[in-house]
Image (tube, rainbow, N blue to C red; front, side, top):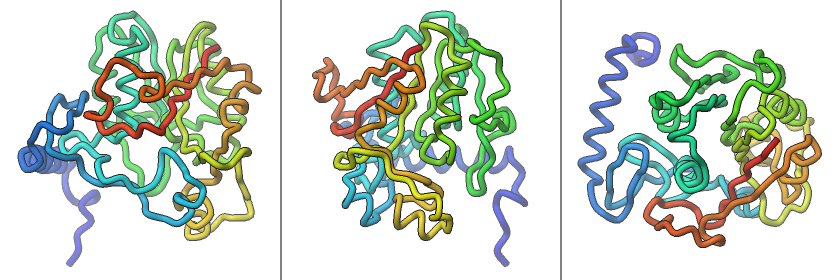
Length: 268
């Protein structure tokens, strides 16, 4: 008989078992070729991850698709998460300044880091979706109707979320509303290198159709090269960072970061 792990295994035991598995994987993959800044471990390689679908290659979508060295064996950080860490470390004072942070659909590795810092007032929220699980400390929040006051947060991190939201313009307006003047938001999405304009078709509703059209069963669009201008129309000032092209003084290849991926940072 198949017993649903999530339903019948106590949370504390499930967490302990997962932690044990992570430690075993870290030992198996131990080496020096790659480094994860979240769990501070080195590995001979990272785990593969991502989808291997035709549309991802046809549209040359950066931030999606299958990558051989993608997932940290110890803390499960992805290449895009490590890109964010690199930006936070090199370009911000988030580790020392007294600031407030709103984290949308929080990645475990980044949440563990930010929520542990004594200088940060940290809030996390996510809209419930079937197949995605978060702990009880994560509030259920619809980012097209965020229950926080205007100008409430210094920093907002929304990493690969907007491509799931049908009314992404409304979500962008809400993020802008709760961000303090002078604040900044990391608003990452998968972006096509060849599409000039964002592609969406709301007649496509079935998971298998969305997978074929957008590259994932729960995506509703493919962002094009107009993504930054979409944010600017909301009122943001957008800076696009790329550690490889901008020649940041760090070994980004050791973090297994995709050199083609840009980081979109929106300022209010």
